[in-house]
Length: 469
Image (cartoon, rainbow, N blue to C red):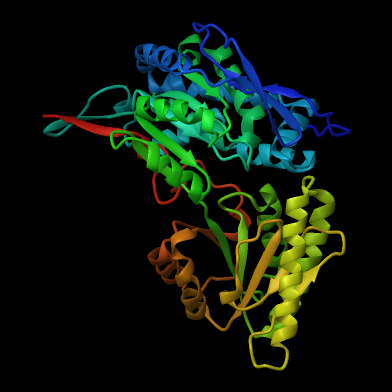
């Protein structure tokens, strides 16, 4: 991606894209998101039925598109999206997400690989032995089977990482489900650009796609949200535990929920066998400004504490270097206050533990830097964000597994470096704790398109299978 010479001035971006057959909204509101102001329709009880009706009316044309053609169309739309991301566009994405332009460019480059036509073709082939099941019944022995996406999927994107909503929309369109997407506040600019490219590429697909931002949880939008929860066949929701619990409480039992909640990324390192692991761990923590579900927050390092302490110093040096190449976004007063309080609290705990026999806490951070390295016991760990990497010294892999047990509900991705012997057995134990992705540490930031997302196939979780005997 091209990085603009300077950050763009704060501007405005439209937070909605409706099918062409609908009249534009009559009244607009404005909500600040990052450094941008998002223009979006005001809450209107008349709008949601019209929007849903329009999307459902587009379903027959969407279903008529062969899956092979759908892959080509979406690949064309994403190619146009990526090629159109010039310096100003990347700057808008960065400003919307509250990230540096360098970070936004790096993220978009990494995520775009999973959006191109070749990758989408591979994804469909990996999920369906015969992709024609997405077009209709395919005979196989005594029965014929088909896989069908629902008529309408509502996507509630997380506002922390740009591109998450685009990925979710692509998946639904591949299984021929109409899309109503509510991007998170920090993912509006990119999502809107993608929806417009889809409309330009093909009128049939464009008629089945709508984007509408609204302030999640706002009282005057509660009725709208309940209406679209009832109208959608399924809801794909990314976000915090509180967000997901709120959706659960208001969505009817008839609406299928697919949830992607808060996760804690973990790494396990044998530094003697992986001399480059400190750089890999730093990159895995820094990318996405540590906001992604795959972002590494906790690192288990095999070895005695003294040796692990030296490794932490190397990790700190790598974080210093990355702060120059991929600087963090501008932090608000509350973020800076939380970071200051965390460091102060850890210093106090470290001082209190001296000479008491309690587990010592060591701390590395720059005076004006946002990164922090904490060497402590596993019980001290608390997800902190802001490029905070917690390190735990462990004598062996069994100790690592014991420490991870309490984090089982939030585990997903574990990156390995230098763990060669007993790798398969260790991965099996990790999966028993709830881990769904075990990969080399260097591959942590950007999952393959066909990864087992939270333990499910990314397309398989969207479809319903039918049989004809």
